[in-house]
Amino acid sequence: MSVSSAIIRKKVGRARLVAAVLAFISLPSFPYAAQSDALRDCNEAIDPTLRIAGCTAIIEARPPADALAVALMNRGIGHAAEGEFEVALKDLDSALEVEPGMPAALYNRGNVNLDLSNNEAAIRDFSDVIQAEPRFALAWLNRGLAREQAGDLEGAQRDLEQALVLDKSLQPARRALARIKKDR
Image 1 (cartoon, rainbow, N blue to C red):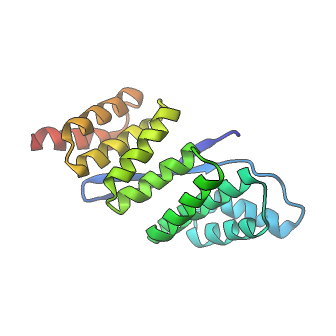
Image 2 (cartoon, helix red, strand yellow):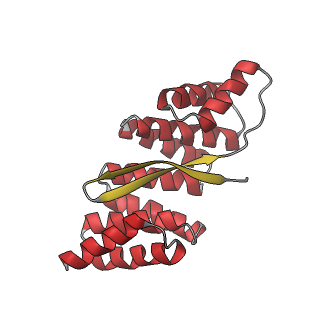
């Protein structure tokens, strides 16, 4: 399954960055125009309400497992964008039940766990993403932020430094490193 990711939203709060990454995945075509609109909304809509509605329509159409997992993940992203973190977590958990180990769903669940201050769960999710995609700088960044929130400043520093090795332009990693060095 081919996945290309695009950052669509950055949110800075309580000295941390949570980047929501949308996975744009080609889902099987559906025969009806209304369903193709739903497919587009589910995969591409920036408006969370449109994304949620499109994904719900796809889920209700009972697509193949890979398409179902993506629709559940994207609906979870929509709910997270609306601030409905518990609902988002349920959709992301469901996506991972359908497609265990799906890096994009793990990454987004990690972001939701970080929003909910479920730091240990966020660290586990980002660690699983890093194991599957070791060059994914945002997973290193967000695991570092989760470790910082959990009080593991040494681990946070290592992760943030690795994020910068992978992507020197990550200013949130630089700011977090400066904050950690100041706090030590």
